Length: 480
RNA sequence: UCCUCCUUAGCUCAGUUGGUUAGAGCAUCUGACUGUUAAUCAGAGGGUCUCCCGUUCAAGUCGGGAAGGGGGAGCCA
Image (cartoon, rainbow, N blue to C red):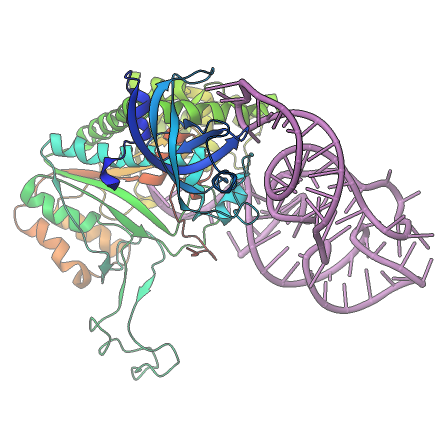
């Protein structure tokens, strides 16, 4: 019987009226003792259910509280009021689940994002979070569709890993050893992992890239899309301890191919979401616009959310080298007037957030791809350029978010790679399996990592990354 | 981890130079009204002023500490 229900999205989309239908959902508001705004999560829009005066017992009407779950059967008719095309004239109303209005935390009023974060288990039932997580879903689906259509193999890389050589960040330890101090010790007093579950020290993965490279040396084109973990004590609006990352790895690609792929990819999934979640994005755009109005004029962004997304879909990203970026920053009035907290003086230092923001938001006013960074500030696996000073790396910087993609052409030359590993004190034995790709049939290849939540932030316009993942994990927070 | 701001009703916030019974809007409850769009109108209930210590005749208000939260920075995706 539950299968007979029609989803509110389908009901509102159809032009048909004067037919019987059954809907189920959660009450958002009950106005005038007569009008129920009902939402079932299929769309941001509510269905107006009309419980005509005198036709329902007081005992039922009293239970139509915000948050209650109900089943309604009735006739779909052209709305007698303004504000919606159709409405459902209720014949029967069944309460599936009561919601005590005095205790239910969500009220028919505006709530702060901070408050909703404290009740993350209920925030799906708000307009804002409904829209965010429908968009998140569409983006995830579009990612698979994009790569599938291009013939990529979706590779499941391990979540538990023994490799700690990648150096992407602090790791969460995985162990079954007792924590009460009774764990077996080595002669030097350090903990012996010989009797641990895996017989060695293991962690949660920080990246699937190295394993991804192994598969790319067989399938040519692969991608990963899964959770990754960083135990960094980061307390910012763009870091999580558990986040999802997309990592394509492609054989026979150089840095330029890599940039082309990343750009095409980002455009494709944004476009997909704009087509599939028009109403959600319009709602989020309006929400953002109202939020912007609260800010002082100087802090407001020039473009609305939809304009920004359209702009990204229709315009090429700006591409320049690290060296060119340093020149622009050094010669900028901002630098000369000493408005940067960290002044740009010479070549070789890593860019600070303020510099990236200046390039993206002030100078170019569009997404920027920076390439060929100094080797000393980048990872060991990035391909050394002919100048001997820089590597074939690329970072994509997005307005308002900063770094959204980090990628590179990989060092496929065995000697050069092991040389870099020596310089950075990475023991060869630990990555012997990785080096086999360079020993047997090595080929030029490239790939990148894209932080999924940062992308969702960019598309939804949400300022805090904790609001674009259902149950965020960050320092001192793992509730729900 | 560092810098900075904040913590008063269910939520969002006022609260004067320290002063006696701590306020508003929304929400909730009760009633009225009935084609409403976060309905409207009237009334009611609702407080360990985050916690601990101190200064003072007297602390929501001043000082110290702790916890939690926001924003920024670093690390990065």
